[in-house]
Length: 476
Image 1 (tube, one colour):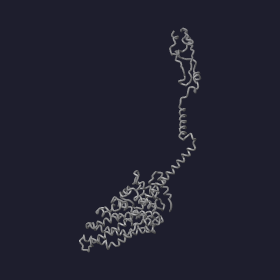
Image 2 (image 1 turned 90 degrees about the horizontal axis):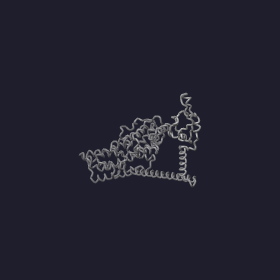
Image 3 (image 1 turned 30 degrees about the vertical axis):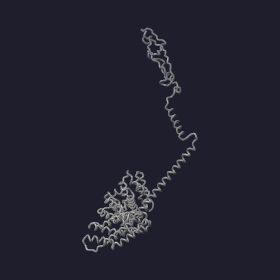
Image 4 (image 1 turned 30 degrees about the horizontal axis):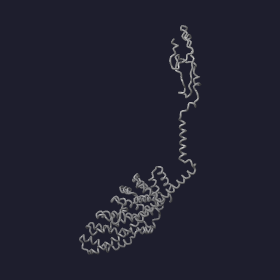
């Protein structure tokens, strides 16, 4: 199985159509391709965890949905993406994961359909248990042990005794879940499990560094503790020595699979010191507890006890310094990547500016010397404006034909009203034409109309008055 499957491409296209960029990025980061999630997709998801307009619960739920897939590749890559975001994303994500009652329920996961399904399903179950424990640790102490401040003024070195005794067992449980991954070099055979192992390796370094500083702080206070606290502290120290041995085996696997030797801390001195501890520091701790319990034991002198404690603390401190080298190297690498990204951005901006200048130069050469692009554009605008104004202007009188004579010739040649009416002085107001002079000749035969009893009164050649007054001839 290599490359993206048709299902992956169809799901990505579906998320593109719905406009869900987060779902599309999660889908592309958890394809069926047997390789680790691509960096560009993880970087985008990391950026999303810092955006206030992005719903962190929606992002987490999308990752949880991918773990419900039947393919071990998709499930494993969904766990890797979640782990990556817990390590490098905004703290809002791990806060939300810690607030959930359940996280990954993959204790019974088994892929029977793939070639490596049985083997990889085992590591998926172990890996999911570690992520659950990592979220639970944050829920209990409200801090990520892999991100806390370290050093002489760090969180674990300055922590009070009561809080220290409660916190160190939580670190122990998380480290136990990590070391239970138990991958051999011959089992790291594909890019998916290698990506998960690399994240576990980085977590183991940072987690044990915090664990180591907590133990140093506890040892420095041991001889001033009460009896009950001394008993708990001695039990914590014994478990610390055992986990140091297991971590040394885990780091040997990391060395065999090709991780840079400079990134692997040197635990040889610390492990060697743990072998000497039963006859030196561990014996001094047990004798002090026995004396507090009232048992008769051979007590070491104060000078011997102080020198033994000092040598043990020095050995653990040097181990802690070797663990901090990886963080420094990763920080420098991140700075180099950021510098390279900024340089590439500047080069891209310079290239775009050069293209812009070249285009402007080509445009300047193609135009006449007297006409600039702005002048031509203004001229075209003025021309279009004049055309629009001419379209809506009122036509002039001279351009219109004289329609008055033809129109009025269609009417009868008589006026039925006896009284004179004002003549239409001009038709220009209605038709825009020249003035029309109307003349009418009225001849009325009253004998024909009213009979013979009427006196013959004729109104021949009456011209309507121009000022609208009545004709007094009819009243005579």
